[in-house]
Length: 142
Image 1: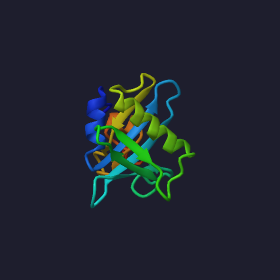
Image 2: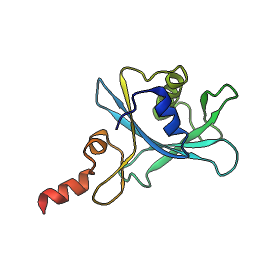
Image 3: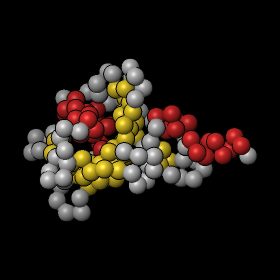
Image 4: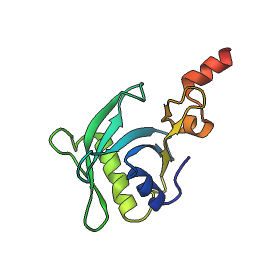
C-alpha cells in the first residue's frame, strides 16, 4: 500500500525495521530500501536492494539520523557512496518528506508479505496483489 502523507511515510521509516519501495509515477521504475535502527544510539542503517533476493541482496548506502529539529538526514559514513543513484534517490525522498510532502511524481509503498510464503514483497505490483511473482507463477501452474 502507498502512503498518502509525509507523516505516514516518516513514521513508517522510523519504525526500526522498515522496508519501503519508491516508484516513479512517470516511468514505473522502482527501488527498494531497508531502514534498520542501530542497536545503540539514534541512527538508522539504510540499504538498497541491488539483486533478486529480497531477503539478502541489500547494499549499505549510508546511515540516517534525526536532527534536533526532527528532520531526517542521510549520511554516507565511511562505507556509503553519496554518488550512487540509490543514495541520491533516498536522500531526495527524505528532503521532500522533511518539507511535509511526497513528491507528486513518486509513490512510496510500505513492505508487504506474500500470502503464500510470507516473504517480504518489494515490487509495487506484488505489494498491491499480496503475492510474490514466484508464488504467483507456482499457483498458476498448480
